[in-house]
Length: 157
Image 1 (spheres, helix red, strand yellow):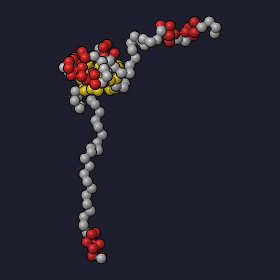
Image 2 (cartoon, one colour; image 1 turned 180 degrees about the horizontal axis):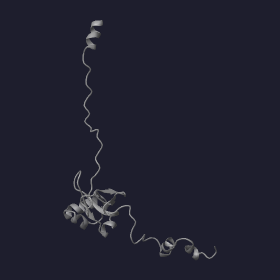
Image 3 (spheres, one colour; image 1 turned 90 degrees about the vertical axis):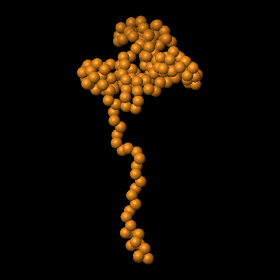
């Protein structure tokens, strides 16, 4: 019996199976300022993804009319775009914050363009420039009133 134990002990230990997953951290996106190509820019806001509600908006992105209509019908007339969003960035060279329309071209490449007004209307989670249409003018005016001067409408105080 001791011969069997000594024979087992002399065998080399089996190697653990190789791990297929990479153990390194993912790299940050390296975006450059369109105004200063040598300067990196850093995100200072959340991503405000875009959505499409019209066939014409999909035609501008290169889809055929039939395919665009089918996609909008499948998504109940609102199609989220996962590869396009609006995001605010800080550039050290500019010394200011600027908002850009970001498009993911592939896994590691991005395109930055100036934000058009129409894109703000297609973004999720942003405040409408003209205000909430369901709020009355009186409520909007009272919300803008600040400090003690805003209380002048309440004569009983």
